[in-house]
Picture 1: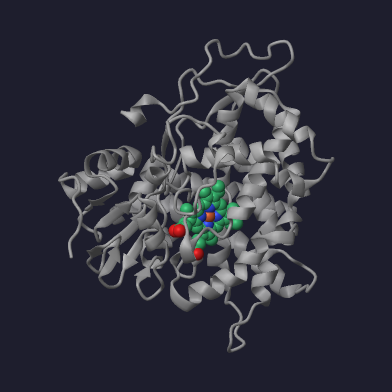
Picture 2: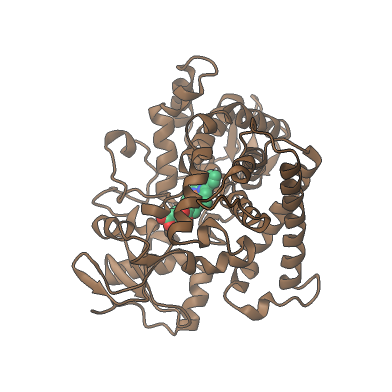
Length: 465
Ligand code: HEM
């Protein structure tokens, strides 16, 4: 029983580098130590990273008795609360998942197609021709409005607007470099007045909480069996003892869905537009494909092979979640014939798994065809993690991505207004484009003239060195 090798960097320095630039550490670790290596940040259990599909399959297969995930997500506790799905384990975790999953799949999910299209069109109308704007905040406005309506239904539109604004502010704070660093350094979490990071966080969280609790109060006072939004569903649910969820439980779950359910999709959409609009031939091919299905047929949109391949390749090359939730081993655990001690954070590394050259030749190049040419297993391609913690919003996210991309492609010519290739950087627990990706809405006169030299469809060299 032993731990694998890893860099000998002093733990605090390694932690600071992990906070500032996690992808470089992962890449260097894989180059030096191969498929499995350790990062020891001192104050936590050691992290062991896996990128081999067989190892990932075995980690995903571990059950509640063998590993816990809730406890290793504890940096999310101050924002999400104790009852968040992301922080639960065992029976409670399983029950909550079963309750929430249906809302983001099948018929319920498809009912949001018209809403997504409408919200996207409204956003497009705010873009001014010939002016440079930033894609990521634009995509976030779309995905936040969509998730708010999916969760709460449309009740009080003033409140929905306030919730949208406050949630964006809270997220901006918690994903900023200082905000994220404060999760590791309790001193930064102290409330030293409204302008200190800790004070500002508590203030914004309280504002979001008040709006969520107001929705819960309204929902409880007008229980309507015909409503199918997520809040109504959660309020109607009872456990074996006939107990429903408390207000605090409801709040934590709603906050989880609100945050997990839009930030990731907004980032994925921004990258997708970045890759698509750099390649005029791809824009044309996608438009030709979109011209095929009958008007308004949202289901067939889901089946378009090239649109699907573009979404997959976007999620491969820069997976928004660069690691799956670390699995905290409760006992010695064997993975690919090697036994790791208890209290180890067994972590499938999505970013490295997606860069294995034997699976993805020329992995640093955006090449959607690879998803047309072959199928990848759930352990070779895993943007949504896996096992009993697999993302509950994966189908919803893909559905939303395709709706939004189809709507933008059919209305807009964009030029990516970035002089250099854009790098991914840490944004909280995810990675996102460093600049947010600037783009320009083209009018017919200046179509295609903004970028003087076409950019390569490969990742910036800093990440491949
Ligand atoms: C492109 C968009 C998205 C990506 C890349 C993504 C990725 C992930 C990943 C990697 C995990 C961890 C899985 C694991 O540890 O094995 C996860 C968990 C989760 N995601 Fe997503 N997600 C996305 C969109 C969404 C959406 C739209 C929702 C809600 C509607 C959502 C809700 C959740 C929740 C609640 C969990 C925790 C599941 C659990 O612990 O059981 N995600 N997601």
